[in-house]
Length: 96
Image 1 (spheres, helix red, strand yellow):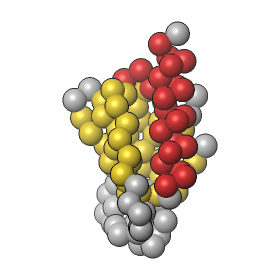
Image 2: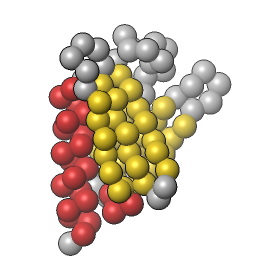
Image 3: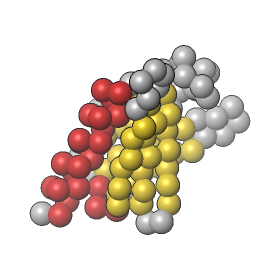
Image 4: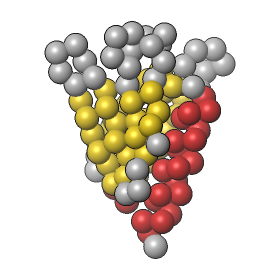
């Protein structure tokens, strides 16, 4: 499933971040003006998922894997909660 950050959020006006939840992992695309950053993480590699959902404004989701952190901002609270739930179920499936 594809989730796209709001263009109204800071840092996403022209090129909004995108998160794809897939069968074996998650892909995070954080585009930039001249270059972008695309990261694909297998569910079994994800050690933690953290979400920040302020009362007003857009939410941020962070993925921790192999000592690295990947962060995407500009999603609705429902989107980040749905992504986190999907990842948690994917991690359970990967464990067997």
